[in-house]
Amino acid sequence: MNAFLGQLGQKLAERWLTLLVLPGALYLVAAACARALGQHHLAAPGRISAQITGWSKSSSVTTTAGQVVLLASLLAAAAAAGLAAQALGAAVERAALAADWHSWPSPAHWLADKRARVRRDRWDAAHAEYSRLYRAAAPDAGSVSGEDLDRRTRARSERTRVALERPERPTWSGDRINAAAVRVRRDLQLELGVAWPFLWLSMSDTIRNQISEARQSLARATVLGGWAMLYAALAWWWWPALPLSAALGVVSRHRIRDAADAYATLLEAAARLHVDGLARSLGIPDGADRPVGPELMSRLRSLPPLAKDAEAPTPGA
Image 1 (tube, rainbow, N blue to C red):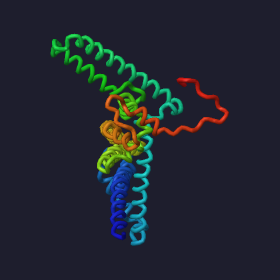
Image 2 (image 1 turned 120 degrees about the horizontal axis):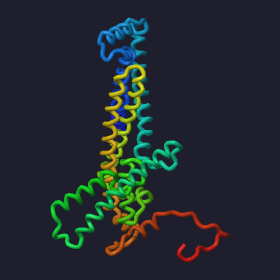
Image 3 (image 1 turned 90 degrees about the horizontal axis):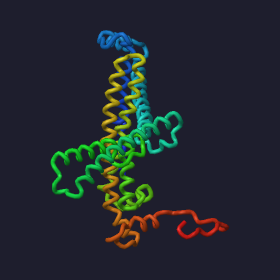
């Protein structure tokens, strides 16, 4: 038991050091450079060394107790910067996935709605072009020329570039994760949000670990966006922090898209692979000629009973 607790404490310390302290310490170094250089100096090692020398001669850091306090303060400040980046990363994740954008306050709701409409119009145009090319070749698919295939491939790529399914959210990453639920609902007649906890319990540890790692990769990508916001704040004192923030923002955006794609792919794959096993565990026979989704959903949903004085529903209601 002691060995287990020791190993657990070591892992927590490593994660604390990797996720909070080291990135936070780098941010503190950047903040110190911004404070020493100001807006009129891009890079002046002499000013930085002079500032460090002045700090080192302070009476508060020449004693052992002062050095201990200074080290503890720096660790606490680095950890605080890491926690701030994670908090901002949560906001970045909410904006990037936009799952609840309908409840956003104005003007964020108005901007998100406008963006969603633009993306939907682009997807509809690309889908109409792809459908036209597909139908034109349907009567005689054997005589389709290579040029026609290239045009159809480009139309499909243009549609996929906007979204895998018809957009419902203002962001690509949000629509990519939502597409997993849309495809499972359409193909399996299964509500992924309702069935997912039951599917999760029926999976092996290996599959759960892969999905968890993909989700953590998405969280780390959004935290990088949080660091970009923190570095942007340093531009008030030192303008070179702004291009650094922009570079971090671009990297964060690409990582969020890649992580969202991987996470959504695993969600859909896990649902397709485990839905029959979940149905069997609930006593639902295999549906060779019919999807098991509707009966599975009727088993998994829990609805409150009707009030005693409620009227009986009409047929078909």
